[in-house]
Length: 126
Length: 100
Image (cartoon, rainbow over all chains, first blue to last red; front, side, top):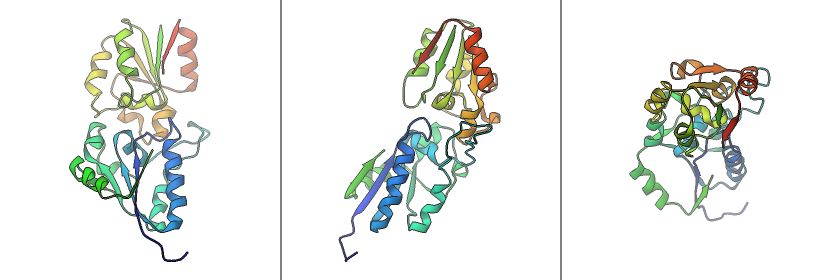
């Protein structure tokens, strides 16, 4: 690809992982978009913070029998996607702590996330 | 009577509405994203503790585990069930209202 303009893309995730298809679709778009070498950040707000919960078990034998896509978050750093931000208020309201997450994240308060949103060229909402 | 709730209490009012209309001794089953309401440490824990005084509350374990949680994180008093337990609840309670 020729030298293009680098834009700031934010993927804003607000849904729990298995009840709807939003979380998986977001991740698919993130991976596709990674080929375009833009400046990407992923933000997890509201029930979106549940996407990053570790120890997900969806096995066919004892579980709900769908693909556990949470391990894919671990692969994001191979695509140079390492800006993952979790909303502190959403995390606390759900009884979660930083240790619950499957990958390293930055915990941010709403003011910090609001500022980050302002700086984006594109926000993709899921 | 059996009530089922399959939406996250953080996103919809399904659980609140269920608790508002359920009568004492009714059974309530939390499944799919509804299981988030059964977990300790959340904003809804006190609501559920109150509800447990009036209702029989059940939670689907496969849905809990799919979401990275374990049964030991479920609020004490909420009874874990599997798919066979789900069938028993539906067969043993009439009618069934699904709070979608």
